[in-house]
Image 1 (cartoon, each protein chain N blue to C red):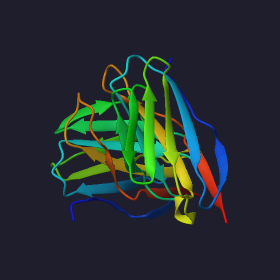
Image 2 (image 1 turned 180 degrees about the vertical axis):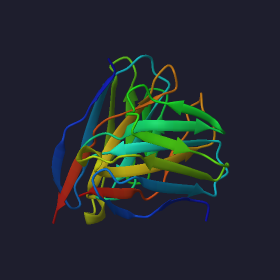
Image 3 (image 1 turned 135 degrees about the horizontal axis):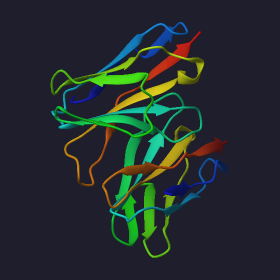
Length: 109
Length: 114
């Protein structure tokens, strides 16, 4: 079966750095997305990786290793508004988007 | 701004009373999706349309149906809601299918079943 694993919950301090990991086992791979979802709201697109390496977008970076079936989302200079769930999603070989359950990130002052 | 709009934001219905959720988009995207998301769970794809071609996921209950009368609008009908259907329902769009493409989401409709 297809599976995406993320930690259920993480806690970090305002101003710090946090890394949210995602491992996947899917039928093929065509790309990986990270979405942010605030409580009770819709997911919003954050980043996209298709090749190995690091993609940087301001305070957020996403890393991919296809050989390890592994990605992480790195958030720097954490702000209280970064408190949200972060969902990892993988496009499989049939171009179906497989979603993880998300990691709830709690930011403390 | 181009966007995906869902109405209503909150819907309360009674057990077994049919309910319809709506979604509209101004992005002119070809593909529209309906997802069900329960608390702390991954979004679960119910249906998607490529233009007017309807695609039903294998494990979507018969209680759920969908209509896409034109490019801009899509509806989710729940014929006889049960307590287990209480969830957030998310509509999303993308430009095309069969390719890696960003999905843009509406704000969602939170359905409560009494």
